[in-house]
Length: 543
Image 1 (tube, rainbow, N blue to C red):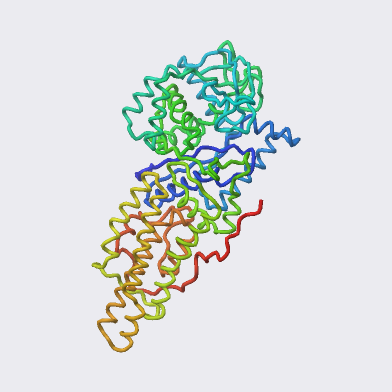
Image 2 (cartoon, rainbow, N blue to C red; image 1 turned 120 degrees about the vertical axis):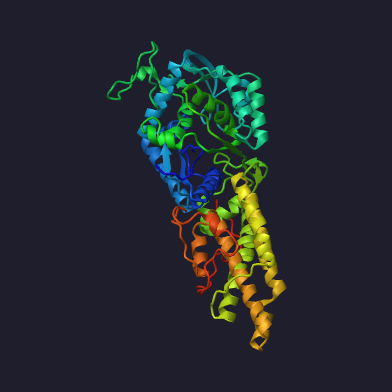
């Protein structure tokens, strides 16, 4: 058993019913940054993401294409894995709800809820969204041509009448309110928590957790008479139906922590430190999910972070609308690091944000090609030209040394607060300060005077260039979770060994390396080479 602090974070799992868009992977990129930050900090980190594969729309799409559902899903999941690989996403597990251990976990959660008196049989009649599940009429949008799901307005609703199993969500209203009161930061941003508290106070209704007339899913483990519906060899009784997709999907978070197969791993990793989810599924994660865990005698998560949507023209970016950005187009144009950077710098991690291809290009050129790229190239080029590549020690009393402790403190605080866009903004304040320092100190002038025999100018030149190289080093180690491929290359150009593995594991706790003056003494720099070539044109992806 390790004595290192452990950190377990997850994303929502995606429907693999179509190729992924950038809006689908946005939270996964953000979670990957946080996972890398914790790994580099020395925490034993577990990062879980994956796919939710038992929804009606996936089964229907496979039928439309004349494919077996599993064959269709396998092809779609490959597209998600390929896109995540292109974006340098490094989960510790990519979970699929068709995985055998998840089937066992889901059935065990149903059994526990049943044993606790929280599962009963009843009849359901109402609207069903293939993308989201059963919807109350009060949650739907009524228009002249019918009712629509607010989160999936382009997906036709189905009217269902079924005899289902229900979960007694209504029983948990008081316990949920107490959980919120005892854990003020458990759902953030705070206004998202307040929305859920208001929803609970308006009254909770029991929810259906099975499908009677649908066969694609995890077999429901209990018969109508309460007997076990799964034989010892794993063969299910088809008449028992299947577990409702949302009940099944939420359970992936404990499956990924070892439930129920590995009690030691589960004791180590649960409860989750952070769930990252979109605002449209806030209710599932901050009302239904903790109630399910309470029913099973398990702890709720420690924190749920609720992000907003990517918007284009004021509308939610979506595959069904066709207004989404292809992650491979983004990577081809900006590179994997540039794609990660512009996405997390342009899109606020706490609210809806309007984005465009043009805004990404402007951000890439301004921040990476110009500000940071220019700072690194100038610092290296001048060190090579004026000091023959010798790396001088930084000074301890200059403006950059004075500014850095405040910058890094604010940067880390923003990261820990899941304000990933603000963290980059803070760090780029320091990039700007370093560029202004170059202009104010004019090393080229100092070098000219030093060449003419001015000893004071020579000493000052060494301090200035030492400060600039140290500033670049600190920026590189700080921004590495966002730029996991570019950071090691930048360190190599600075003549500094990179101690971390491709996923951020290994090496010393990074906070020790984020102190001014903690870099290696002496030595020489490597050669300068542009990490982020400027985009002279602004190509938009075709189609």
